[in-house]
Image (cartoon, rainbow, N blue to C red; front, top):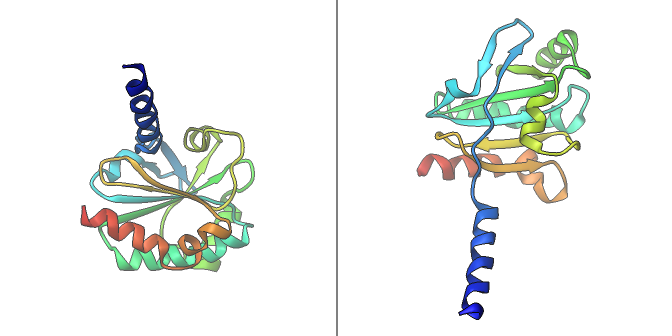
Amino acid sequence: MRKLLIPVICALALTAADAPRRAPGFALFDSKMQVFDLYDYRGKVVVLEFMETTCPHCAAFADVLREVAQKYPGKVQILSVVEAQKDNANTVAQYVAGHKVTYPILFDAGQMAYSYVRSGDLLFPHVYLIDANGFIRGDWVYDVTTRDIFDGKGLSNEIDKLLKK
């Protein structure tokens, strides 16, 4: 009996590690003091990006996000989040103008980011893909292995998978 129990426990542990987790809720302001609440987007796929206005990879990813917004109007909501300690209304306004951003960029004091990343190391860009039911289905930080998400068609492919469900 013991020999059978160990593989079952291991299988359950591996399955639980891969299980989607509910996206932590939040309500954050943009530079115009408008509040954006994750719950308001239930029923849509949400692309949640943590970024900095001075990050070159974030700037390149803005083009990918613009393409996503054009490809999935009404089906996908893009929300970007900056740390209020590093960016302000002026740096965000320059970024929005320079990269023709049409989606909201929200300000976080750090608590919301921590609830997603679950560590002190927030690297940029970091993107989460949240399904229509509020579960995280993708989590990527920019590096060599995730370039297709940030520079190619990988994000659109992941969104297509969620929209087919």
